[in-house]
Length: 201
Image (cartoon, rainbow, N blue to C red):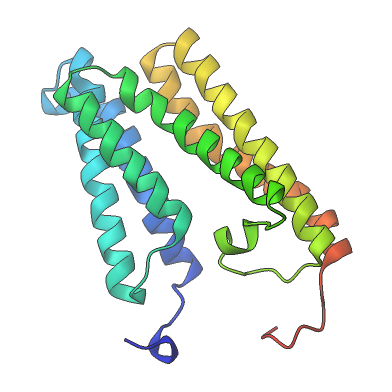
């Protein structure tokens, strides 16, 4: 399919594809005992479902738009690798490391881009914003630091709390924190937005 034939995903569908696997992961871990899964095995069953759902979500996304966004693709790759290690090696530490690895990788990549004077956030965001060079630089730096904060928080939670508490943090902690942080960047975006860039409103 050519570029002209591509249609962007509806925001609600895009959100469902990105959050669906995570929701299934939470539900399987929280209610696995109702299906006869022992308490100490719930995280492994949830991880298997998480990996499978992630692959399905990627496949659906590709079928609909014939391309895969960078962040979900990288995240999915880490889910598959670390989820697979969790199941094969029977060690839940690997799936708990996944948010740390993904967020640290995103943060390091953004900082590396700044070092080479090439802010990469525009690519990560699929060019949804049009900002000045200074705006992209500042926004990229802030997101890089935020990703490192998320990585540190994940390390603290999984190393000090129960598995159920970590799952709750992964589902109900990381996403709200990300939304709040994104909204807090609105003033910076408005200050550096290029309003007349010839693109669609």
